[in-house]
Image 1 (cartoon, rainbow, N blue to C red):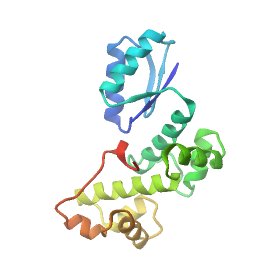
Image 2 (cartoon, helix red, strand yellow; image 1 turned 45 degrees about the horizontal axis):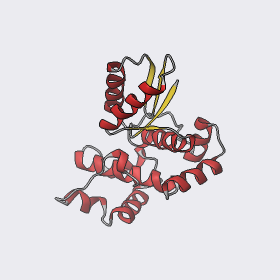
Image 3 (tube, one colour; image 1 turned 180 degrees about the vertical axis):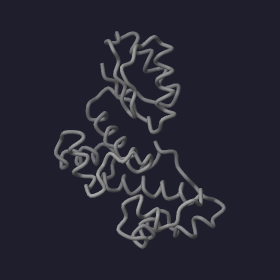
Image 4 (cartoon, rainbow, N blue to C red; image 1 turned 90 degrees about the vertical axis):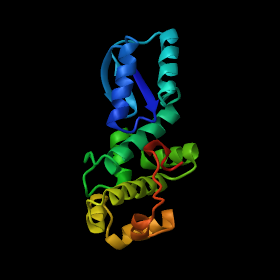
Length: 190
């Protein structure tokens, strides 16, 4: 049985979900971002308990296919932008990557994502990239050009312009700011 779970955005989330499900006696085949596969079906009563336990930890069990598909899109983007998983070939654009990984035409995925979230996939990708730049700026480990390269920007200027458009300040101004505001990954794009 496959369970689709909202708000799983990091390895820590996977660990928490695994631990909580194992406490409930659910035998797991695998736990990935946004998805869990069990070795056996879960009866409706136990599934209600699973849903409640996940919600108490800040997750949401997705019941409908549309929401699950949107979460899958978000998970793939987060893996590439935030976690640098590197599954997407550098030369491949996100539209082709998402279509290939999910098995639907990009136009369908794009329309679904927009109708469910109120923003385009491109806007979501930009929001994730800007949030990653904020994180990298706060660590002060990479130059802006290294960040641009890692996040597949065509240039440092492109990254800087997009950052300013979203945040209202340049990366340098953000770095100097004492009120650096970052968002939790599950809140990016909301």
